[in-house]
Image (cartoon, rainbow, N blue to C red; front, side):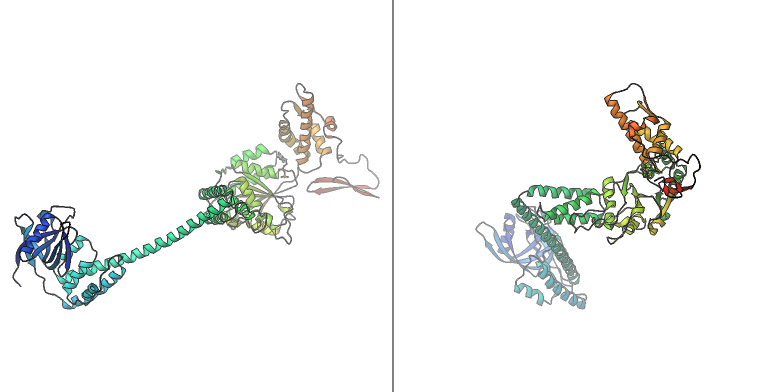
Length: 627
Ligand code: ADP
C-alpha cells in the first residue's frame, strides 16, 4: 500500500455542486473568502480542496457546514469578470478526506488523499463498464434537457478505465447533490460503478413512466380541447341563429336532471349520448323536438322511486270488506293468494307465482277489487284497458324512427304512476286480438313473465326496463277467448253475477250512500228498498251493478237539482212509485211466469255472462224475453 499523502491547502466551498475527480469544470467564485482561497492557491502550487456545502443557502460556511470528503484540484485558470467575480477553471484529481481546519482569514484545511483501491474483480468491472456506457447512452437519448457535445460523448464511450467512467458519468448526470456526494465518498471502483448503474437505470424507468403519463395527458388534453372548441363553436353558431341561449340552458338543465335521476348506468349513458346529439341539433327543428321528447321520457319514467310496501293480510281483508259487499269466496281466494305471495316473497318460487285474473261479467267489482288490493298494500293503482288492442306496438311502443312514436301502454302507465311498484290492472285481457300488426298477446306474456319482465324492452324507450316490482292483475269477461299461454300463467278467480238481494244490499250500503254524498244531499235524501228493487228489475238488466249505480246516481242528481230549485226541510224519501219522475219510463218488464198455463207455450231458462233470462217458446213464434 502507498504511503498516505497529506496536504494542507485552501478550501473552496461549493454551493450547489459536487466536483468529481477526472473532470475539468468552470466555477464562478464570488464570496470574498472563497476568492481569497483561490488567490492563495494561485500564489502557491495552484492546488486547492473543493468541498460541497451541506446546505447551499449558507453564505459564510464554517467547517461544520461542509461535507467531510472533497476533491483535490488544480486551478488551471482564473479570470476576473467586470463585476468582480472570479471565473475559475479547475481540474479535479483525487478524493480527499478533510482532517482538520487551520486558522486563516479564509478556509484552510489539512486533507488526506484517498487512494483508489485496486480492482477486486476485473471481469465484473468490464461488464459494468459496458453496461454503464450503454445505459448512459439511453439516458442521454431520453433526457429532456441534458445535452453533451460530441467530444464529451466520445470520451465516455471510449473510456476503458472504470474509475474514470464512473466519475465522468456522475459528473454529467443531473443527479441530486447527495447522490453525487455519495459517489464521491465511494472510492472502491466496482462499488461506485454499481451505484452509477443503479442510478441510471432508476432514471431510465422514470423517463419511461413520464413518457407514458405525458402521452396520456396529451391524449386527454387533445380530446378535451377538441370538445371545448366544438362546444364553443356551436354556442357561437346557435347564438347567431337566435334562441341559442335558452337552448343551452335547457341542455344544461337536462344534463343536471340526468345526473341526478339515479337511473341504471346503461340508461344514463344512453341519455347522455342522446343529450350530446341534441346539442348538435338546430334548437327549433323537428328532430330536436323528437330528441327532447325522448329524453323527457327517460327522465319521467320511474327507475328507482318506489312506495314503501305493506303486505299484511289482515289489512287487506279489512280494506276489501270496507269496499265490497259479500263476495265471500272471492275475498277468501284473494287473501289466500296474497298469503302465498307473502310467504314466498324473495324466494325463487316467486318466479312461478301466477297472475291474478278476475273473470266475470261487467260491473261485478273486478276493477274495484283491484283498487282495494292496491290501497291495502299502499301501492299506486293503474288500469290499462286492453279491449280491442290488436297492435303489439300498443303494448311495446313504436320505434323512435316513426314520426310521433310513443312508448306503449305499459311504459306510459309507469310514467303516470311514477313509482316502480304499482298495481297494474290489465283490463279485458280476453278482448286482445292479433293480426298482421303483430301479436300483442305474446308481448303481454313477456310483461307478465317474472323471468323476463325485469328486462322488458319498449321499442320507444329502447333500454331494458324492470317491471318485476309491478303487481299485475288481469280481468276478463270470459275465459273462452284468452290466449292459452296467457291463461296458463293465471290464477283465475271467477266472480259470478249478483242476485237481487245482493244487488239491493250493495246499493243500500255502498252505492246509494256514495251517490247521495256525491250529490251533496247527505242527510236529506233516502230511498226505499222497494225503489231499489224496482230500479234493478225495471231499469237495469245486468249481472253486475254498474247500471244500477248509474241509475242511483241519476236519482241523486235529479234530487239535487230539485233541491236547488226548491229546498226542502228534513228528509225526502224516494219511493218505487216516484221512479218515473226521476228516471223516465222503465226500460224492462220484469220476467214473470205467465199467470195461467197457455196452449203452445213452453218455458226455457237461459244463462249468459250478463245474467239469467227467461225464454217463453210459443208454437207459432219463438220469443226470447230477456236481453
Ligand atoms: P268491473 O270491473 O267488474 O266491470 P267495477 O269494479 O267497475 O266492475 O264495479 C262497478 C261498480 O260497482 C263500482 O262502483 C264498484 O265499486 C261497485 N261494486 C261492484 N261489486 C261490488 C260489491 N260487491 N260491493 C260494493 N260495490 C260493488
